[in-house]
Image (cartoon, rainbow, N blue to C red; front, side, top):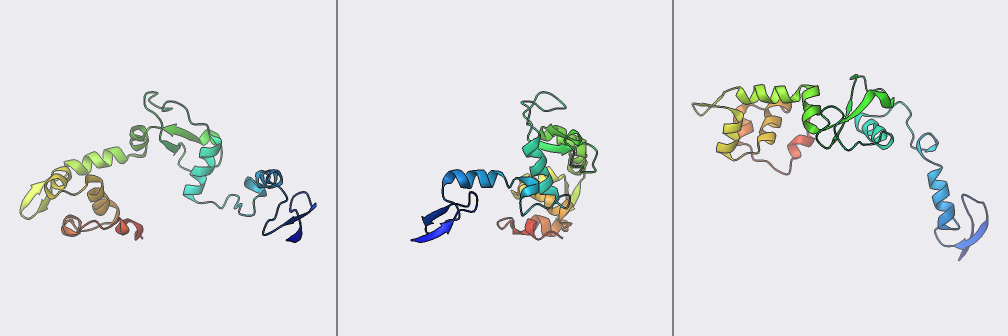
Length: 168
């Protein structure tokens, strides 16, 4: 056994591979490293996902969507589109209200009404997805986000969603 010094209370203790003399010292020390005091704190230089996580921890999730007041909120949505760090610039929305607000729902509706020619047949994306037994969302992602040709989108098999990780 080695004699060590606790990283929090600075008392001598005997232990192997530990930095703290007790669980109490460890928990007090770890709670003191929240946000600005953490060595991993990036301040205002955080990314999209980290900002959502940070705001999600601070902004309490209500029981109902803040727009329709009917459904359970799943998404943390930015109000101004500027992704400010202030809590008043964020709201909890259900998926439908969030997609309406972002314009994604209208885009999907337009895309679904759009006829696509493939193998000398014109069908909507939803009908093609049923006919070819391809998930509707995967098909939309392949065409809209990955900008695949319809031939590649329809014929390429889905393999563990690796294609979605290779986005540019």
